[in-house]
Length: 171
Length: 102
Picture (cartoon, rainbow over the protein chains, first blue to last red):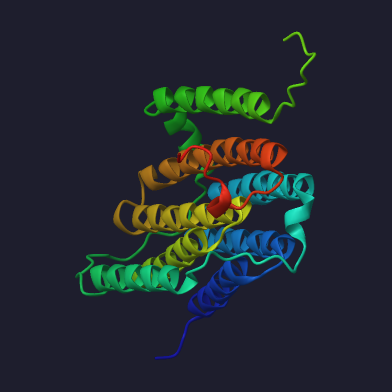
């Protein structure tokens, strides 16, 4: 079966995503792990594009690569002594972790490979941003507002947790 | 056309990589990275199912937007906790932090 151009693109992107994800969990230098995590997120944005999810691809690049990766790099810089390459980064029994992950992989593949998915022909890719915006302000307006409260609470919580409390601080 | 199973396979592999990262690492930031990988795998699943089973409603997209929001909040709070722990015990190795396990 010859691959179409889309399938070839999917194979390449999956290779990037899985390859860099494996490097993220195996590299000893945490700083390199974070950089490969950014590459993996970029690959996931490519998968979103193949799925005709243009808004999500942009949000993935903006939020994951633009915000979360930068946040992790900041945390790494602030905890600088753990970043050196010679520190042992794994727990005492990584084989057990590998066994659990492998068993999970087998279970997941067993679940979806044998199910008869009823997927018809796909419609053409259309812009999704307008539909998402309209849905967020009509049908999903309550979760939307709740998400803003969650973000506010998380922001306040992060500031309170990371604040250095000095003993002579009146507050 | 890319079959749905390919997306599910990619997502399953990404999820299990994340599980391995969470279980095998002792550095708290690495564990957070594993969690982010798992959330991304879930998002791929949501968008793929939305595209293949309900292409015109975009419920999967909206769910994925909320997952991204919660992931950002989780990363901010998690890294704040990591920095706070580092300030108290000068390392962030999860297997050595047992102050609450007396």
